[in-house]
Amino acid sequence: MFRTPPARRLSAVLVAVTVAAAAAGVGPAYAVERCKVSSKTIDNPAYSGPWPDNWDFTVKACVTESGPNIRHWATISWDLPESSTHAGSVFNATGTNIEVTAMIVGGGVAVTRRTDLARRLNEAKDGSFTPSSYSSRWPSRERLYTDVILFLDWKGDGKGPQKIHFAPSPSMPGSAR
Figure 1 (tube, rainbow, N blue to C red):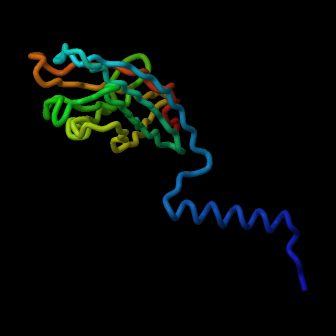
Figure 2: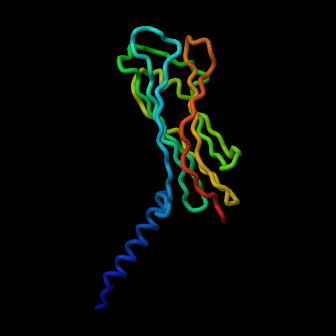
Figure 3: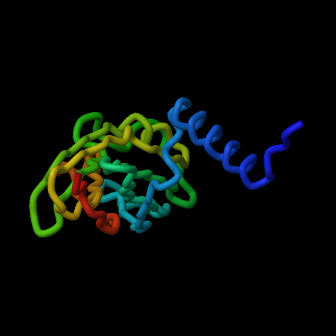
C-alpha cells in the first residue's frame, strides 16, 4: 500500500481548504486590510441645560485589497451623553447620515455612499453600525483610501447638518492588472 508523505497530505488539505473557502465566498488569504480609528466628542448645540449633552463618536475607516478589488468600508460607534435623559428624536430624519467615500490620493472622488443614521441615533441607546461596503476596481496604480464624514442634523438648533470629518484610512495601491 502506498502512503502519501505528510508534507503532501498537508498541501492537499491546504488546497482543499482554499477551494472550499473560495466557494463559500470567504476572501482569499492574501487580502490586505488597512484601517484607522478616530474619535470625536460632539456637543448637542440645541441643548444648553444642566445635564451632560455630549455624544462620543468613534469611526473605523478601512480599505481592503483582495486581488484586483479594493473594498471600502467603515464602522461608526456612538455613546450617548453620560446621564442622557433624552427620549425620542434628537436628530432630524433627513440630513443625519454617514458618508463613506473612496478617494484617490492627490485628489478626486471615486465613489460615495451615504447611509441614513437618524433612526439608529434616535433610539436613545449606545450603538454601532457598519454601512454596506462596496468594492472598486481601478485600471491604474492610483492609491486609494476611504474617507468618512458624519452629518448630524440636530433638532431644534435652527441650523442644517453639521459636517464632521473623521480620520481617513491609510492608502492602498489600486489594481495594476
